[in-house]
Image (cartoon, rainbow over all chains, first blue to last red):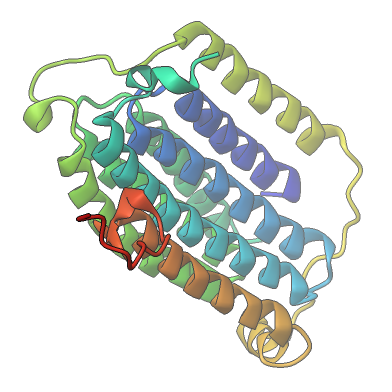
Length: 101
Length: 184
């Protein structure tokens, strides 16, 4: 187990997240893809803190900031999804013709 | 790094990737939420192996709470009731696979071939104590900014989903209506 191995796992998680965010039709499932990408980001940040910074706590601070971003993304995402459904009656991307092209 | 830790690392890694993949393979969106939680728990385990016990634990705690709420939203926005029938809810499938694989390959090349400095966490350091001193010391502004940002998000989320604005329905905005009556 080395820094490279952890970053490799993080890259795999990020790839799955990219696939999910681009392929899903439902808004909430797109958010799951985004969360998976942020998950990979946290893992990479902690891996760099563990392997390259000599225990500098600012590396852990970066992971906490990413967690805050994750919470913000979830809260605003759900608010937007609820609002879009209420105004446009849309729960999948295909129903939003106004944003097309 | 001991053999047990290495074994646990690879076990958690496999679990994180496989459950992350299952999020987009399952027919039920509620199950997808719980697969995502499993992926986060596995990453939390990896963080604990990497000596960041506090971060690993709060990741697991946070995600357990978030995914419980997420499951309720999944029921609200479910495309297929109960998820009992097999279904596909994907579009632009080939582009997505290529993009995901491309992102993985590029990042993996960076991970495997870049030259990173080798300065591991020294023995005798307590990362949790360090993090606490950092959060309430030098980096307090960053920490407090995150708190203010979360407060702004709470206000923004409530404003986005509210039925009523200040002067009528939410879509009419916050423009004050005229005091003149037009009954002439």
